[in-house]
Length: 503
Ligand code: PHE
Image (tube, rainbow, N blue to C red):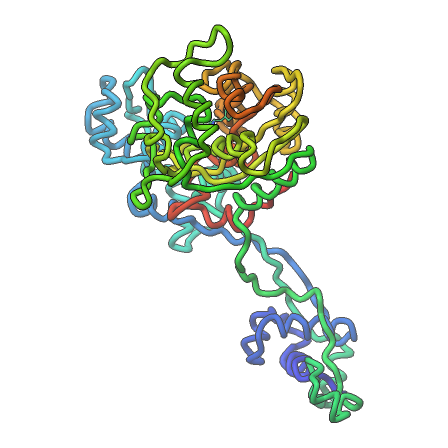
């Protein structure tokens, strides 16, 4: 019988009385496992081998789990420190026990959340007790982790494995193990002799022009063979979500704005009726530019109207700030702290000409703030800016727009809290519920632009507007708790590789 190279090698290696795994066949034939798998499927089709499949679960200890095998589980370290401090006879101050345990950062919370659960003692109003009868030496989780690391684990209890998995200390993966035996037909074929046919894997221009293709034997494709997993490049989930947000807003009838990341304070603040002595305009909240420090020119007519609004207010009973206003100060350049600078540019007519209502505009763009990094704050983040210009808008229009927008991402429990912005009245902060912690998370800020802002810009109908945080939307969608899971050196690569952005 003539068979393609790989099939010939496999059928001659396989045996009728001993089942070979794909790995064993690959070893013996010196062929890549995926080639062997392909050949095995072909041979099975022609009845020469029989294949049995089973799935095997592999358990692997995560990096965090390995740290605990080396240093001890946090709750055990806390127990030992508490015991040392005498917590078996009298409650000990929490801070003292934690200090003595050497636990740091997130390990502290991990220790606290597992301590009582596992019966090491009680934690109550800042004090900890240690149960003298608890025995960390027979802690089932610690024991299972150790056994997994040194390979001595055979029958581990399902609930222990589950709790290790829930704690992120253990990962399970499944793979299909195939074993191959020769069928009677296969035995006969091998006995009669197998000839190797050189098969062609790829049709080339040479084969075509030489006419060799006419006699060539082509290898068949096997689309069921297991392939090696390759981690290619991929669009970051934040970018993917930004695209989804854009699609959604375009679907809601919005057009996209775009404009400078570094802009004059005039557009970032003054046009928004932000007084020049507002705390957000001081150096601690703002990234100033060193070169150039100032924009050369601003539209003179608009500057004059904005200055007047700041000094005297707008309308007959306008008050204004009665504080100094300097054009030099307004010409200073900074990285925008919000994309409302773009809304000001567009509404002023200086970006794309005068706009007649109704109009809807949005941007999904970076903004920069001199904040302190923490789980919910970065120095730069994406803001979903938007505004609607129309006659007679009300707060109901604003709320309805948000409900419609967020519902498209599966978020249907938006809450509103009255707020203050110098440029909107009324103003509302938006909150959503974090899917895993249940905490209310601030997701945006909004309002109806004040006449003090709109009149100088030359807009004489209503404009409702908002700035929403894209990263916070992502938190609500995927349930991660630390923004740094998706940014920077601490980010969770597996999450970035595997998360599908759906909406
Ligand atoms: N600029 C506001 C912020 O960054 C968001 C906002 C935009 C609020 C427009 C109201 C109107 O928080």
